[in-house]
Image (cartoon, rainbow, N blue to C red; front, side, top):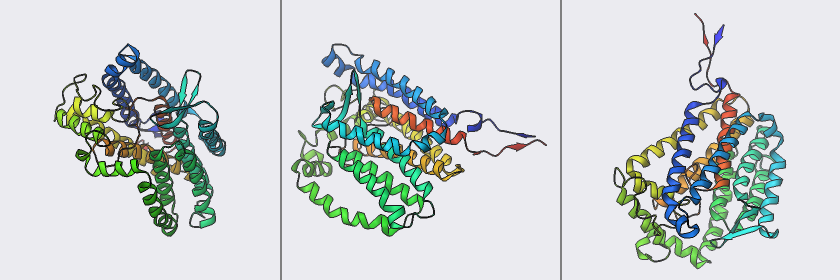
Length: 379
């Protein structure tokens, strides 16, 4: 009789390598959120554990989302593609017109429902991946056809992009566009269909950037932050200082200096800078290695999936997490212009953590439904 090998075998339960990497990052995130936010919370709320206790709550909900997504039948996700897309459209519209929209930092990106605050653009990312996986799997033999395999997907992306751009949230638009482009590329869409829109959009993007002085100045400060030390270049300079202070071993958890009202949003967008200061190069390398493991396992799950829908869904979710990681790290290391994107599993934030944990649950689900590891025969 065949005997299944239990090690890292999704058939026996969970992909332990993937699950451990995610849970380690979530646990470290709880610790680092407290370290990064304690001074800020004490000033704003009179207690140093305000963000810490909320992050513990978010982490608990995230684990429930992971376990739930792991055990929901995949055929249910398949049938939810269009309803979830329309629900995400509805929430994005509600942000602007319902009166429940919450404005912070000049952007209206959140909905307040009672004591809960929800960011619909995070759900939009997940629903776009689900829609693309569903649609591409049904049209897998026609993806090279412009009107069938390319245009409908770009139309859905365009609706999402317009609604999110109006918030405004340019960073999320870039991620949605990149996810769509990569998934269509992996699916086999014509390169002429993929590259022609880029050539058309580049002049429009240039005009968009130079017509808004603050955006143009942000680009200039990215090229030379030291030239703008008190405004657009301020956060980049202090991010560099955090990494420089941390050195190889770091200053120790809780002993960082830049989080003390120098780094903006130290517990969200710039938590990686706090980690660089307090855990040093060694801690940074460990975190990068854990993210690499997550992406590696996601790609393996997508590669071994037995059905196009599962494969496209796995690669889309992996791409979504990977892009967030690359953009956030690129920003705090001065490799990309500043964008308000959190670092998956580490940054403070309920919606982002819930959606990313649910995404990992779906990856585990896809892996568990796939014979990714061949059984060993008894001698």
